[in-house]
Length: 121
Image (cartoon, rainbow, N blue to C red; front, side):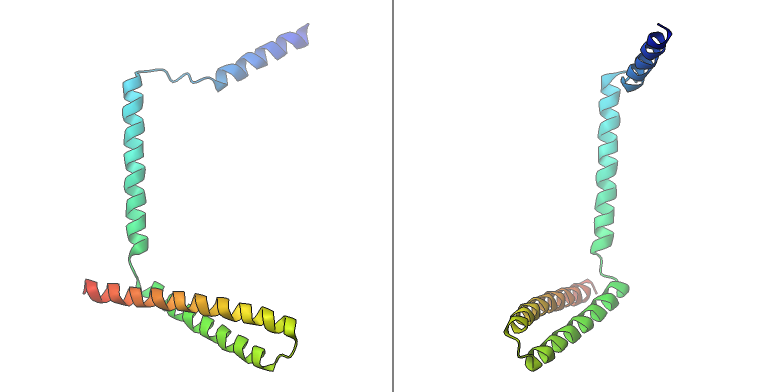
């Protein structure tokens, strides 16, 4: 019997803890939720603007990434030229196409950053 009483008390406490006991005016809740949503939207917009601004560091990182991708393309071409295994040639050809595609995308991004920088000055 004592175990049942303890279980009943613990169950009741858990139910009370799970309930929304905030109460209050629903209009105030709606206003508070709307203000929180506006604040979140404003922060997101500010973060997006800061992320979109090209910086010198981002430009340097992009240049290093392009140089590394060019080296990867050159290495893959050299390996492809020396390989006689058809299965490996097929895989290397696919890798070369993917590396060249990534390189073109990075170069396009770098050109866009350069245009944006020139337009803002």
